[in-house]
Length: 329
Image (tube, rainbow, N blue to C red; front, top):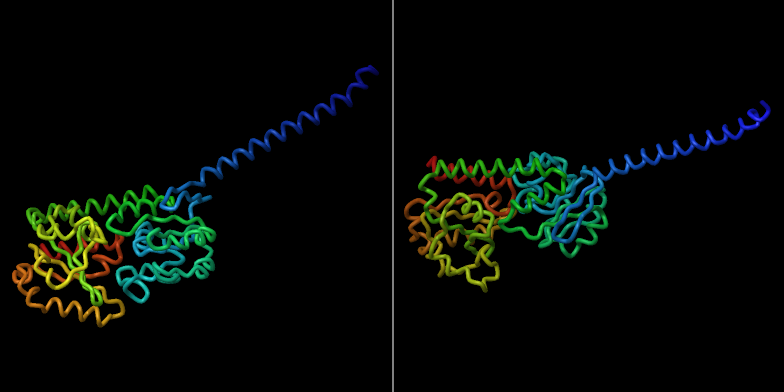
């Protein structure tokens, strides 16, 4: 009996250590579960400048491109800050209602770093072609995701932005809806898509023919339209803008012809020089002699939705314009 009593303290101490060990194991298991849960929220995004790692789905987003702004709106996200629209005060008319309360953080080629930092974003979206020089400074403020460029490949950029926002599935739905709208319009147009189109843009003292790598060019290609045959020779390997556009003089006006001609003018704040350029060219005898003009197939459209906005909302509005011009006239 005495021997049994003497063993009780030993058993008691052993039990305490055993319980403590079990407790530590449970704590480690709970800790591992918490870590696993944290890892499930975090994700990585490959982009033009490297890899961005986000700890969770961002809630405060600053966007530094016009097309990126449209991407956020289409995905149901209102940014806390955005660059000013190229046209509008400060936003394009077609997005201004969705941008109420959003802070302006500069323009695409000159962003305000102090303003961006003050908004305490948890994600910044921009473009290498516009903001490469300040990428490191932006990335020091918050994880930053950059597209490569801002030409006709807006769909690829859109997919990147959707991934950065952790909204890939919703992003796929938005693109699928646009593609359906395009196919529906293509079916309505029927044989009209066999026409050759020409796209012209007027700016202050400068005129361009826009081609296949432009925002409008990619959409016309998806619809199945042909490009004006006589313009192909203009877009050679040494053209500084590639297949995006080419700057031309009035002697090239005859090559602007097509079965149907669309033109628009970039005139921020009613730029008188840009408006004067458009008026001068469209009153030139060479312009008036174009078959598209003489046949009533030259149409002035919005520079904002046909070119500068460059995003999915503008793309859908461009489809609406084409339907109205080509089917309702």
